[in-house]
Image (cartoon, rainbow, N blue to C red; front, side, top):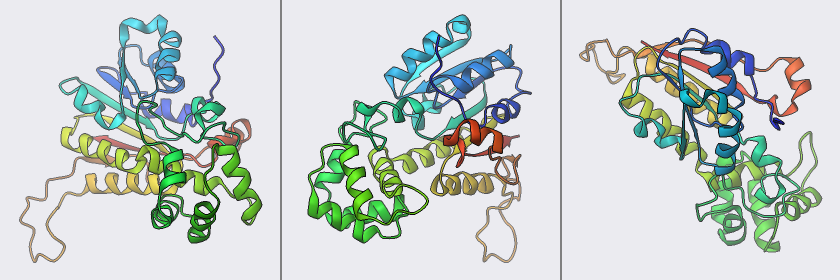
Length: 300
């Protein structure tokens, strides 16, 4: 079957899990099963939980992983709930590639890209909030918040004002073309960061990521590898901060004179002191990988 997607940091991800030889690995964001196929081929004794909130992705992955069907469980849902769903399973690995998949970017009807036929951007097509609601109904103050906090747009006030005074917009293409005409053209398309902000708002991406980490922290899966691939600084900061928090042995308030917590609260160790980034060769082969970062943590 034709595989319409190149998984980022593929070899580096497989290496992160190459010593896992029992139990389950959860692929929180299965997509086209690029990483999943490699993991289940490499680790002959493990089983896989393939999670995604996109029906199309799951249907494709079921076909792609058909030869491994006795070792794979498929689950539809947002990855913030996946550990709760499989509580009690022997989880030895957790992988989350939290970028927008090519499945979504390449389909104009999903409205993620600059040529989108719709203003949608929903990863789960069953939810009600979509990009059209954000762009066409949010107040100027709400749009400023979205562009400042989630898009990291320098001229967030100007972008919000332009949209409010020229809406409604019916498609991502219409909005991207409009911003391209009205905003300064630097190294990246003027719509790149505003689109990032809208997409994060629509899918609550940062909140979902934090809740995934909270559920991992609550479970404290023993002898488990956690590998997270992020694509922008907001996500990477969350990953870095949680990993740092999990290594802390003393959790007393910083102003106490003497440790009273027992100084034994470390959950494991950070495997990657610095994030793993793609090679020049990978970026050349797959330009979408250029901003990806892989961080790895191992629970004791």
